[in-house]
Structure formats: structure tokens, C-alpha cells
Image (cartoon, rainbow, N blue to C red; front, side, top):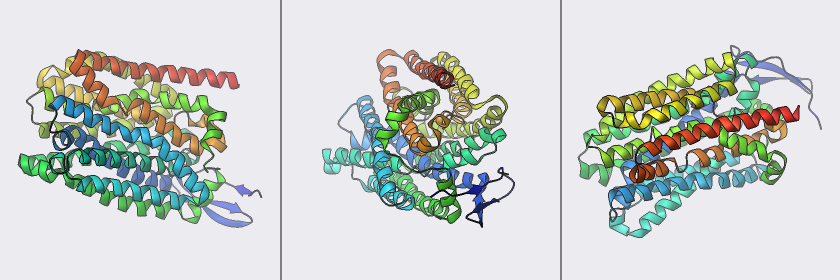
Length: 445
């Protein structure tokens, strides 16, 4: 049965637009209201993400791998860090099935409950000195569960926001969800810096590092109720249904739109590679190869994250003026240029490290602000919901999962110049993917 609806152009200054459904007047959700749900969801997920990421460089090598040399311990810690990104597509497949079998609210509740349980499990997990290798196995298990849960937490609101945003302001609305990344990092890094500055070493590694995980658990609970309050209301359900934002079998998606999934996964590679090279990797580098207090470096990164937030906002204005694809490719080229200077800056003393962090975060904000969903329009109505989720999973897996591990290994084995080469490869992949996307469009037309 088809639903006849009449939807006027969205006005971001109006909270609701009137929609006629079966002769009844309903309220369509305005883009600004959708953006609230997107920002809440992304901020909570990124805080959880960065709490684990910072701990994987700062805490876990000592707590779970005390029997290894510091470099080897950190590499193993980063290997476990990558497990969540490997598990994330599996979580998407599983929870898409749950949504088809039950409904969206059941899926979201189960996913965020699993995420909170895994995060709390890490907070209570004894270290290697108490339970031996079992602690490493449990840490890996909880990390996998985090990845499965993150894959299942896709609620479709970013796609709904993109479809409801005024055409001339799509870049602006696209960047709003991306603000969750710098916001999550600012809170996580500041919390770790505070604990490092106010606890002695034994207390921090004994119990202090666990508090950010408790905070992440609490924030996930708050975010769960906030997002459920949005997605189960009649207006949101109607809008999601009206835009055909429902899951399809992943096999069907890959058969119909496989090339688009691959292009989407590589299109964001520049920003996703830089993502960890300026956040997680330099913390390990400071700890292993310098004498600089890591707490001070975390505060520097907090300042950089504020600049990244400004870059994300600016990316919306630039994208609305010049186009999202052109903006993304232009800043990917800028990251390629930055990759040539990054090794020199990192070894350039205090001023060089400051420049590396601050410039890196600015570029991250400008590029990452338009990285999500730039090519998901290629999926069409039927496949957009599942396609957007799986594309994001692939982008994280290809671009971010192994970035700290690869960057640290290259740095230790061959020198910092190879970290720059790694960044360059990500920028090249983004440009090539966007060129492939353009060619695919031309072939369709």
C-alpha cells in the first residue's frame, strides 16, 4: 500500500513542516531537530571510542602487557584496538537483521546496551599481574563486543538529515554529526590529562584510568534514552519510512551496489588515516621516544581538537560554496602536502610538535567535516540506509583500524618519514576513489 504525502521544502528555521498523510496532518521533523539526534549519538560514540584509544596508548601496554618491552607492548595493544573495526561490519549485518526481525528501537537498545556492557567490563577488568593471560583475552573480547555494538548503533539519522537538509545547505548539515569527533576527543583527552596531573603513577595505573570508562558507560546510558526518545516518536518513524530508510540484506546490497561500497570506503581514507595519526599515534610516540610529559601533550591535543571543531564548521560553509566532492578532494590534497612536512615537524622540537598537532587537527576538521556520506547518494533510496552504514564500517576498517599500529611500526622500523608516506597513501586513495566515483556517474548518465 502506498502512502500519499505532500512535503514542502524544509526550512531549518521552522521546527516542523506539515505533511499530509491519508488526509491527516502530521508534523515532519525539521533538519535542526534531526541534527540534535545525530550530534548526541556521535558525541557519545566518539567519547567511548577515544577513551579506549587513549588508554590503548597510555595504559594498556603497562597494565596488560607488562612482560613485554614498551614498544612491543604498545604494538600488541594497538592490535587489540583494531579488533573493534574488524568486528564492526559484522555488527552491522547482525543488527540490521535484528531490525528487520523486530524494529529500530529494539536494535538500538540492544546495540547500546552491548556497548555499555563491554565498556563497563573493561573498566572492571583486572590487569595481567592479577589474572595473567586471561586479562588479555577478556580485553580482546570486550573490544570485539564494542565493535559489534558500534556496527549496530546505526540509526539512520545522518541519512535522514542529508535527505531533509535544504539543497543549498547540505554541506552545513553534513558536518554537524562530524562535530561529535572533536567533542568526544576533547572530553576524553582532558579527563585523562586531569587524572595524570592529580594522581601519582601507582594510583593512576592502579585505578585512576578506569574512571573514563565509567564515564563512557554513563554517557552511553544518557545517549541511549535521548536517541530512543527521538527515533521512536511518530514523526521520526514516519520520516524514516517515507524516505525508505529501512535495512536490506547485505548480500543484495553488495550485488546491486558493491562498487559504491568500495568507493565510499576509500573516499574517506585521507581523513580517517590522519584521524589516528594526530590523536592516538603521537601519544605512543611521545611516551616511547621523548621525555615530554604526556599530560601536557594531551592538553595540546585538546587545543588542537578545538581547532578541528572550527575546521569541521568551516568545511560546511566551504562545501556549500564549492561542492562536497570538490571540498573533500581539495583537503585530501592538502593532507598529501602535510604528509611531506609531518616527520620534520615531529622532530622539530617543541615548536615543531606544536605545529604538527595544531596544523594536523585543523586539516582533520576541514577534511573530516565532509567525509561522511559524501558519495552515499549513489545508493539510491532502497539501499541508502544499509549502504551508508556499511560504507562507514569499511572506511573505518580500511582507514583507521590499523593506523596507530602501522604508524608506530613504521616509525620504529624505518623512521618518521614512513609515517608521512603512510599519510600520503591515504590522501592518494581518497583522490582516486573520488575520481572513480565521478567516472561511475558518467557511465550511468
